[in-house]
Length: 75
Image (tube, rainbow, N blue to C red; front, side, top):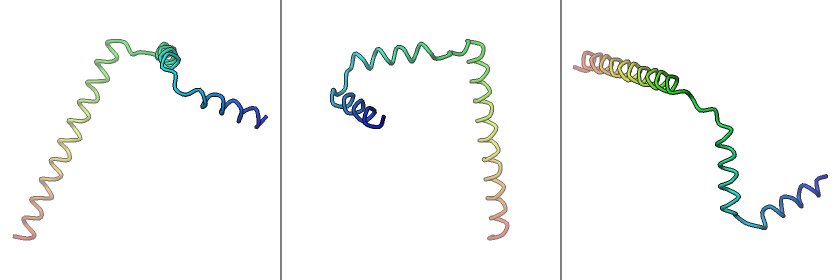
């Protein structure tokens, strides 16, 4: 069994890269993808933008607080 797998691997690697086969397999794999609906894409994109904005604002506020605290200590 192991020898058969080794032989298949050697056969597949010895032929090199085949662009036509690659494109066919890529098209086949893209056909398996479940694409989101327009509404789902918009709502999830807005959720990501909202979370990024909230986290960035939180980090900004924490940074300003520590900056203020350091100025009070080292003044």
